[in-house]
Length: 204
Image (cartoon, rainbow, N blue to C red):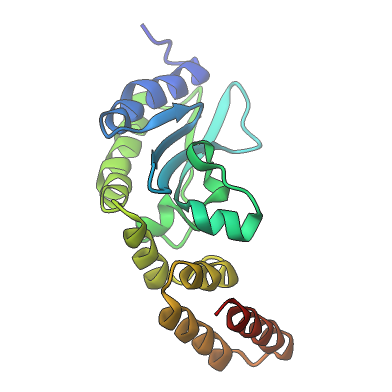
C-alpha cells in the first residue's frame, strides 16, 4: 500500500506503474526517468520526466520532455554519436508537453503532502495518452523526423538546416536558410546565415 503522504513513493508509482508499462509495450528501454526507443537505422525518440531543480523529498514538481534523435546529425553537429544511449538534450527536435498540448505556459505537475494522488495520476496519464503517445507513435523513421523538423523549423535553426542538408534534403535546407535571411533585420544574424550558406556550398 502506497503512503499517500510519501511523495517520492507517489512519483515512483506514477513512473513505474502508470507511464512506463505503455512505453515498454512499444519497445522502449528505460534509464531512470528516461524512456528511450532507438532504431538501428540511426534514429530514436525519447520521453524524459524532468524533476524541477527545486524539488525536495516532500515536494516534487515535474514536467515531460520529448526528443527526436538522428545519429548522423549528432555525429556532424557534435562530433560524436550517442546511438542507443542518447538523451533528450542530444535530440535534434525537442518538445515539452505544454507545446503539444497547446499551452502557452510551462506545464508542471506537483506532488506534495497535500496532493490528492488520484487527481495528479489522472491528469498526467490523460496528458500522456492524449498528446505524448500519439506524437511519438507517429514517428517511425528518419524521414518522419526530417518531416517534423521541416514542419517545426526549430528549436535550433542552424542545427536544423545543417541536418536537412546532410540528410540530402538540400532544397528544403536552402529554402529554410533563405526564409531566415529574409525575415531578419539584424546584421549579425544575416552574417551568421551567410557563413552557414558558405558552409553548405563547401559541402556540395
